[in-house]
Length: 100
Length: 111
Length: 140
Image 1 (cartoon, each protein chain N blue to C red):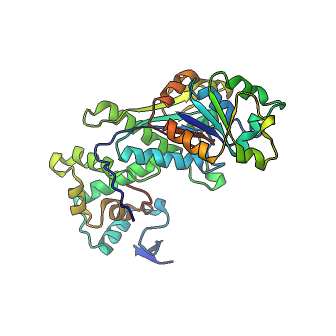
Image 2 (tube, rainbow over the protein chains, first blue to last red):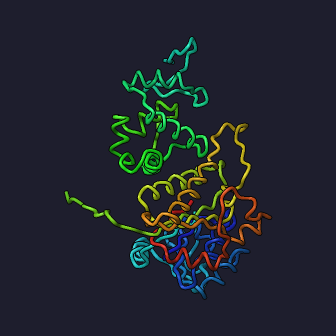
Image 3 (tube, rainbow over the protein chains, first blue to last red):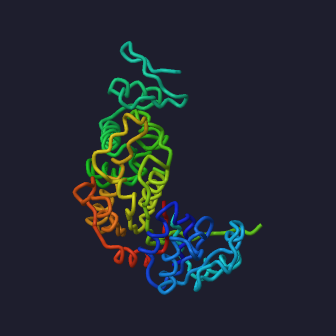
């Protein structure tokens, strides 16, 4: 199962619910405003810092870049992927759960 | 807006003949709509129409054809509980034509 | 131009419908509900799950007359009826579950008595297993 989150954790509870309901070991990809959760040093950072032990966590590079975040600002343990990586993840995991 | 006139009262309908306010329906109006559709209302027609109205009142949408078939089967027996039988009653389809006679809005989805 | 043919006869999948939004404020709740009804027409297995503000979709006592919108909460009764039908009729190969997340209920001070349909109240961990085992997740 591949979970995607596209909302900022400052705006919605989509990430919280995703982390509560995603089975351990499943993959999580942060896209669009969801990438804000992958950034170090915010009051929301602890959520993804805690998640990397239980899930493979990815963040979409183009969405980071668009929002002026560099890869060094990404929480350690989170992998940055490009669009081709997104496609690979979707293909690899089959079922997709979009937390809107 | 076009309208059916029944017992001196006008009931507005859309360009396809569906009445605009489901709450305005009555049996005399249904007979007039059926006549316009070229239907001769038998006991079985009324059963379908009444079932549609009861279902709509409870759930606020028209039933799936599967559900309607099952209800007819329950009332009139195994041999009449088929899609084919419903089309014999309402040649333009139980969804479109029976809903029109029952005063329900035109079904939008896959019913 | 390539032609695609899909063999759908006899295909049976387990769908999870993840309802997370309150009704009326956005179109999500109604759209997911319509998708659930379509899955019934094709006799598919379904987990209809209410999480976060989605639990408000099935709260009893909704009255939309003053906001001039259609109250679609009675339509959830169809889900309950389809479920009972599938449970009782051996000819219908369809397993339906109506599930509410306990954490979402507790957070909103609700109990299962507040709902207009009967539900299973399950923990987040139990729901995680059910979601993970499904073939397709439709969320809103």
